[in-house]
Image 1 (cartoon, helix red, strand yellow):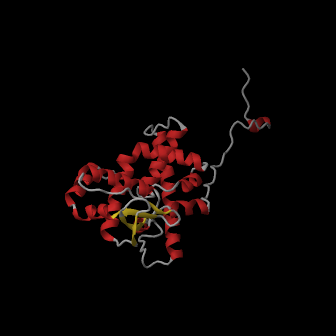
Image 2 (tube, rainbow, N blue to C red; image 1 turned 90 degrees about the horizontal axis):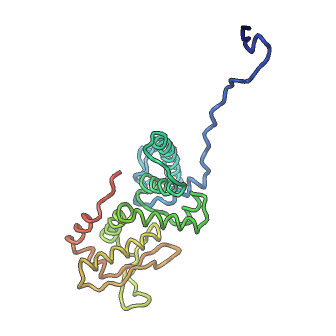
Image 3 (cartoon, rainbow, N blue to C red; image 1 turned 90 degrees about the vertical axis):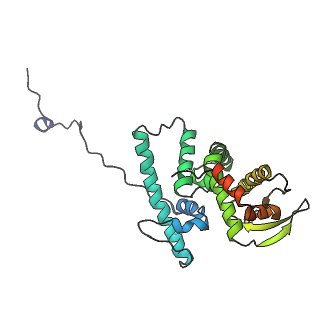
Length: 254
């Protein structure tokens, strides 16, 4: 049997083996990082530490310095979450059944580890997930339907209590359609209005004697929440109801 000759001996390069360089890591576009960072509410920004910024003092940093710290935080976390996603998938811990399930899982990860259980508005989600606003609205609706009781509402409930009990309202205004006065509070997202509506429903069950008007978005441009002064009083004075609701809707575990 004739001996096989190597490609060097024959002078023929069969290209059976060749080196393939690993693709270079893509950089995040500035507007993508900015969209993530803008969705972080101010009360959570001090927790946005990273390797480049061990502490984030929201009060002392200038606007540009705070923005740079938030962008570095988002970039670092996105890289770690991308690695986490791939390892979970390749280890069989996270089976992505459909592209829709993958989008919902990613949205959950962003909500939990970057936005501190805040869910941004549809315009931001459309930008991040490369969707139309309509599809982004459908994605957020699916997410809220699946995780409202376990992720969204438990944290929003506590944020509402904290805001009502630790900050002064900007003004007290009458309701636009019914006879009721309400306080005006700034909110990071219009989605907090839905949480306020759920809270009023819970308070009505716990305190059926009270008559409370439904909260609503007072200012769509500046994100201002109108909430009945009767509701505010119940949140400020009835500690037993607060503890009961906190027990009913426990904080999600990280």
